[in-house]
Image (cartoon, rainbow, N blue to C red; front, side, top):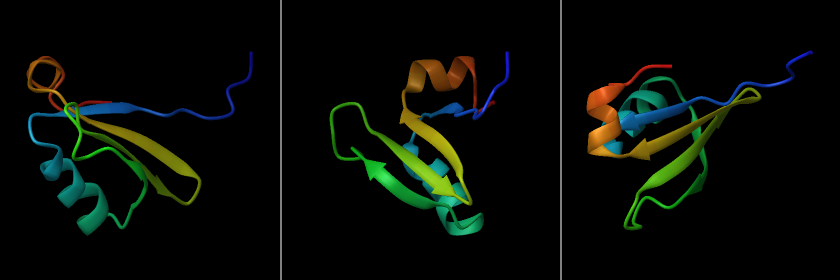
Length: 67
């Protein structure tokens, strides 16, 4: 089996914390977002990399934020 791509899901209590880190600090771009939805999430992209960011307090406390 050969893996072509890995797309991690990262959970934050407040998705804006993740956006500050990945967009403002690491220069990722928002490829898709539902930030203003009931369950905020977005897809961040940079140099062929893709990350899924989610706002979910319960999962963020369990996996704060880890890959």
